[in-house]
Length: 185
Ligand code: GRF
Figure 1 (cartoon, rainbow, N blue to C red):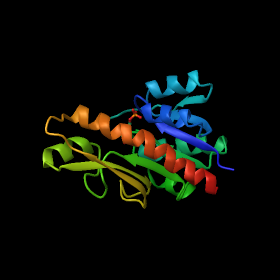
Figure 2: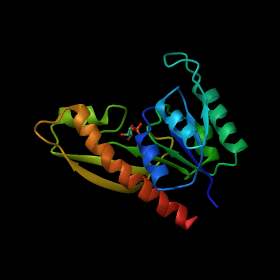
Figure 3: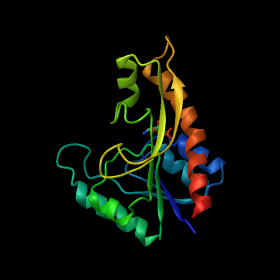
C-alpha cells in the first residue's frame, strides 16, 4: 500500500487537484513557507516545513537532502510526488527512493529543462509546449517519462498566461498519472 508525500514550494494548485481527486496524501512537505502548506493544514493533512538555511551560496544540499529523507522515512512514506518543489536533491534521496520520486515539469522534455522552462520555450518561439510527468533521478529533468501533454503557444501569450494554461494541463495529467501508479502498487 503506497504512502504518498507531496513536496511543494509555491501556490500548490497541483496539490489541490490531487486532493480533489482523493489521492490519499499522507504528508505535505515544503522547503519554505507557502500556500501549499496552508492547503494541507486545511485539508487535515500533516504539513511539514523543512526550511532551507539559505537560498543562496553556501546551501548544504547533502545535509538538507538527508533531513528530508529522514522526515519521509520516519513517516514510512514510500512514494514522493514533487509538485512545484524548488529544491534540487542530492544523491541520498535517490538512494532512499529510487524510482519512487515523481515530478511534473512545465515543458515537453527533453526540451527546456530547468527552472525557466516556460520563459525559455516562449523565448525560443516554439508553437507547442506542454508538460511532462516523469520519474525524478539525480540528472535534473532527465528521468523516465510517464506521461506528456501538449499545450499550444498563442501569439498573445506571456510567461504567466502560458504557464497558467500548462498548469491547467498538469492539474489533470499529474493526478491521473499518480492514480494509475497507485492502482498498480
Ligand atoms: C508547475 O508548473 C510545476 O511544473 C512547476 O511549478 C508549478 C507548480 O504550480 N515546477 P503550483 O504551485 O502547483 O500552482
